[in-house]
Image (tube, rainbow, N blue to C red; front, side):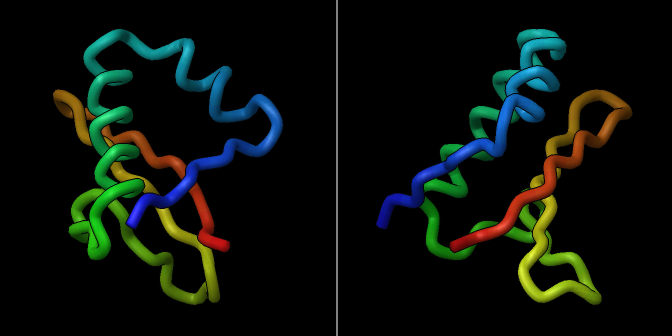
Length: 73
């Protein structure tokens, strides 16, 4: 199984380009996991309660948690 990641407009790309290399590397790691792993651990991908199809991708680096909102088709 391989999922395809599609970005809406330029919102994520602009955010991503402003991060340091370590954060970019961690984001890439989580995206690869989402693309290839059937059941991604909740530490990295969590369904948001109260919504039908909204999820948050969670990337931790140092004392920061970066949240990237997504949905699946």
